Image 1: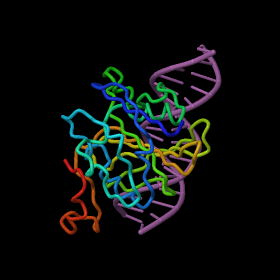
Image 2: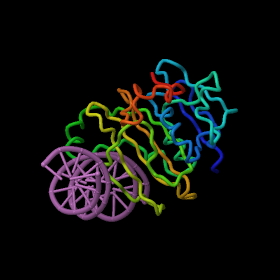
Image 3: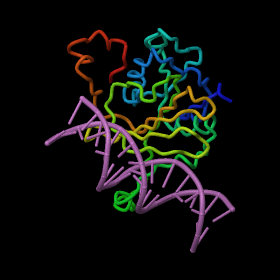
Image 4: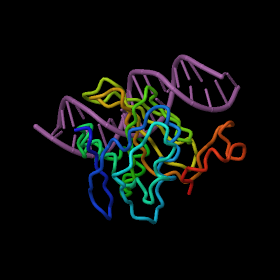
Length: 206
DNA sequence: CGTATTTGACCAGCGC
DNA sequence: GCGCTGGTCAAATACG
């Protein structure tokens, strides 16, 4: 059932929303800059869903046409994965392995907020304004496409993302963010805000 | 030569 | 307890 996704929030619980809301065509990948968690979600506000909004190919930012916040943070990825990818909720536990795991063993597991969306794109890794370093790749069960693991390159930032292709439709890229950036996006030369500020007027920098 | 990516190994969690 | 799986590490390799 590809037309139905779910959002879950600690306050609001589980509620449905059409997953095609988060399908972006390749040429609007630029809008991903506005969708990364730290930019999209005011941390104090209760998430709301505007089920009437849909992304359009040339629409820079659907969020600006709505007076609500389209996205909610929370355990989105495991819900969507469960409904769309057929992955068990239990498969989405946080994994910290090796020495670090031993060191952290006595600590309580802190589940980072997650944020997931799918994009129809030939490109696996879309530009979201942050710099990522790949640290792993894994072939997951029942898929012919490997899942890639990325970490934010900022030293103090623990945000991770996973990128994989939908088993049922390899044209779709599933991107899952875990955690929230504690810094501004790392912009390259041509995207520098001071050089070209108007380019970012529609984005939700917080 | 410094940085990023690749990839096999390792580890923890889970189900049986 | 054992095997399977996903997530991460880190050495080797590639790249600019």
